[in-house]
Image 1 (spheres, rainbow, N blue to C red):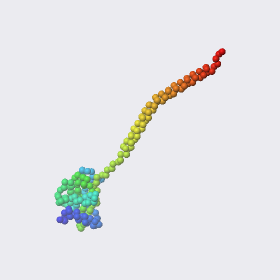
Image 2 (cartoon, rainbow, N blue to C red):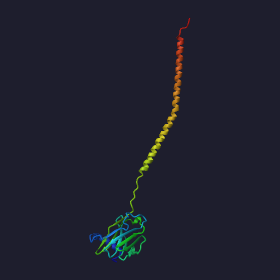
Image 3 (tube, rainbow, N blue to C red):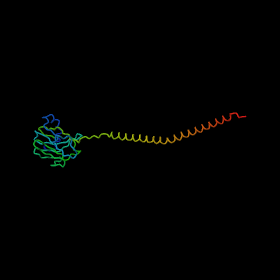
Length: 213
């Protein structure tokens, strides 16, 4: 019973602080691919835990974003694996041992697999947590479509200005015949008044001339 995964997980929760103050952290959890920063959805993710002083195997756990720990697998020093419910295999995870490296494979990384991964070693008389390896999807940001909005507004303003210019041009064109018509009418009226004035002048002059005896 001392080697059961459930018991190891419970003991790790109770003794992790004491383990951190004991012989020091002798394990390290990390991506097998050193160049990896963030896993992608559906990707096969491989992690390794290097332990040099463990003779009782290693347990892999995941801490989610809410701080809860989830037991994944226990890998013995003989490369035997035990999953939750004492299962010997898992559809989502694979555990193995190669030399001093205890490896965990996430077959298809999903959103629910995100978190910080730790491995726990039992170095008598205490348990030791490894350094944590965060595994989260990359953060994506969406830029505001300011350029598109500004272009649309500019197009709308240009169309409005063109419409106003067309309207003004149409109004000016309509007013031109009226202007000429009005000018012609006033010229004719002036000419008629001038002729009338001339006729009156001639008549008056003729009437004032003395008649011959």
